[in-house]
Length: 190
Image 1 (cartoon, rainbow, N blue to C red):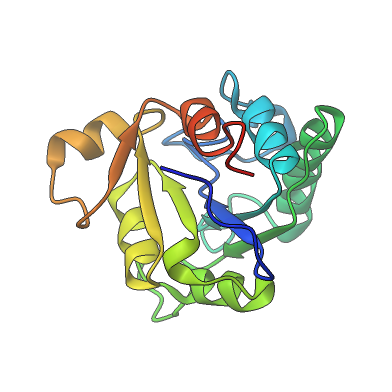
Image 2: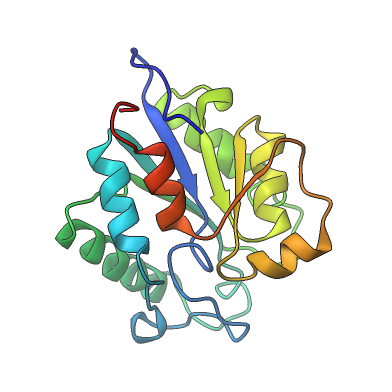
């Protein structure tokens, strides 16, 4: 799982939010107080940043469509995440989110690849050189459809996803985001 070659194109890693960076909740994360990072995830993002990766977060946030929170609250949740990452010496370069419900016919809701395509275009990254880390099958399906390299983490809903099987071809499995960062941000790979 090397970090990639040096060159004109940026090294991009796309991360799911709930279950990869922070604790997930079947009741949704509805406030900054409910948003709590998974152990090691903030430090992992800092490590990836220091290794030269651009970091994009791609997340379904149907709680907006369901009326559980509004865009202002979502922005406050993301401000908390960004602040913690910055304090650890890292940076999240962009957050892409789908505010629509599961029955919406949008292109941005995972498992559709719309937000991944947008992220790749924004950063000028090649899909085949872009890692995408998720804990649910829909994360992996969207990334795979966009041509990205997929990594399933066993945090969040990852163990259930692993047991279900049917992962996109070539998917790599790691215990958590910290393990992914330790591998792809290894010395000599940046």
